[in-house]
Image (cartoon, rainbow, N blue to C red; front, side, top):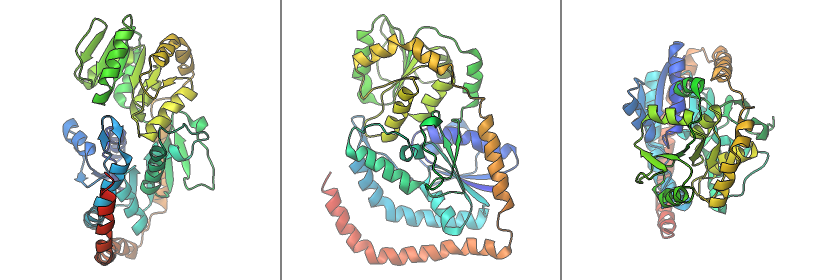
Length: 403
């Protein structure tokens, strides 16, 4: 099959796991064209992957002082939506016309999902983000806007698909309801081959691994390492100097994985990928989600609910001391976690793709319709914007005054 694969370009988690899936699909003879942006494009270039990709416009999250600025994020999204929508339609028309995909797979990339729904191409969604809408219990947000904007973004970005693969390390906390929007296939998180190999030689060298991408957290991490001077730390992604109990390293993927497999526990934000890899390697987690990132708060909340570690709104010394004192308890809970690499996901993915392939449109006029619908959409879009742009500009001026 020819597969159009849309990948979110925010952060490295989406493109990392999607790269694994893309290589897997290509190894089975499928042709893949990737649509991504931002970090997705950077990762493809830096890793040397020989993917056939198109650099598109995407959705950005805006930060200030280590906090997500939801209003700013929303404002920039609305401001760029008309131009982005028109640009994407032109790109997608060319892709559909030239590539003629049989199916669209999306990892939290909204425009590829809209394309699939607009012209009737089967859609398969693979992500962890929809969990924020279907948890049995929800963590308290740090603000109303945090939860509201995250849930609104998920509802906007994720369309009803033929199959929704939900990546989850805590499936017992997911509410499965046949009447809901999502037809779920719950599978374990996708684990990189390097992590699977590292899992064969896990050890405990008695240090805490720190991975934080926010520079605003540096002072808090520094105070934590000074307070707990009897504990050894190895830190990545932080601008700090070495101390007696702290070694700061420049990021190296190989060395980081080696340290992850040999640490006593991990301090990280609430990113799904690293949390999933730490769980796979049976490493306790102290999660400090980025403020404003409700999805990260959900991940940290689930870590604590499962007994795999603790979550904290900040680097509270009391919470971290509790984490250190209960490492053995977390390890015991983690020992019950079982995942056989990516075998379950691969089996269910190919079963789903085979079912989709049996029902693909085979008639010539279906292909013609799939090609001309984007032309109609583009012209409708031009007409629509020509009528609303004056009003739209006025509203954007009012919205901008809030920042």
